[in-house]
Length: 530
Image (cartoon, rainbow, N blue to C red; front, side):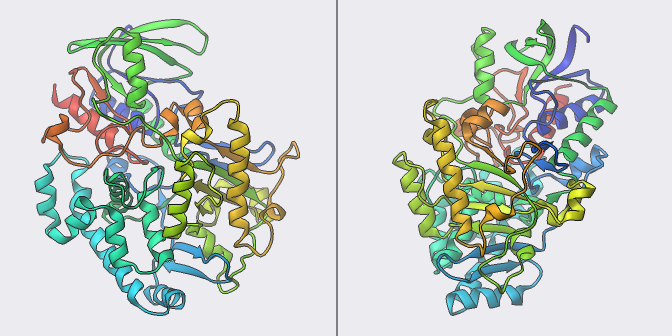
């Protein structure tokens, strides 16, 4: 280890690794300090169940926002696979469901007609998809470039009605006008509520911003499966960074940052317990802005990464990983479980059910019927299973629960009890749509325990440093300049009030999701300075 680096990156998640690889390839000396035992942050694969060879994407699990340009420029050995089935949504209290087949429009129309009794919802669904593609085609090409103005993006969209529908007015108004059926409307709405505790009509438009990021990926909005699991991506990024000369230090917990416009110092505790300080020409924060603020305060630096008026970050989800001996049978016998679970399986996500769950959680109660989204990674990518599990027919399930905000689990004295209640109610809600109990399909690990792993927002904070479990580090921001908040046109959306302090994580403008975009942009911003 040297005493000084051109750049010290705090946090070795996928964005920090992207920044490290780009900077090192440009000849800069780079040190990455990661608190965890391995780099990767939330984008890792783990064998979560003792004695069973299944490499689960424990936290983040699908890829939409990662530009192919980053994969190509860093020469990453990484690939994704497209899911043919977009989604399946069972209808509560019936033996029917809605299937959306991304490659068979006639099949989707027939399923929607059987549910709604007409074509109005399918026509609205098709129009919605057309409009979101228009948004995606305008926004996606800008993500790896300096920030455009709001007016420039609006002009690129080229349709004021589309712009107003998704950027100016609450998302709920647009969906209510397009999708008459409660269930169809709810399926569309979920893209605005992933990790975001909001209603469809919230005036802040947090749901609109979340929706936008979920429909622009690749210019199409497709969400793909990472081959080999999320760890395959961060493994490839770590290899690229090391190959270019970056130094990666897992097990290094940063305790303080002192920085001014000319550079800074980063103090950390190594895996051996020794406290060290290194000098940096620039400090890049791959951690959340709220975490960065604490480290800056500890280092006696007055500058802050958060902005005045920013709401306190809060996560709003429950993540559950399961390993099954086989897929469960559905009450809906017209749909193959392999189709239902290979796409996104929506549970309790009609528009009215989502609103009810929100209202219950806002009152401080665990929702009676928590909404969730589920998919089976191993159907699209069997490589995450070892030979024995693969031969036995085993499958994984990844569940992401909505409207379970951190405030519900904030009291340490009741955390475990409330977590158990949330897990039980979430899985019970899935059971309502199955022809057999999910428990009958669960594998047990080497210790005889059912293969169910759940993480609350508080546990994501503890494990990953996500403040209050917020998977986006803070509320998502519009992906363009906002001079009123100090985000200037032509900047990269990674700058702070200190020239030597940049954001390279999800809390940057155009951060959130597994994208690498903030890492790329932080590297570009630093390299432009010479």
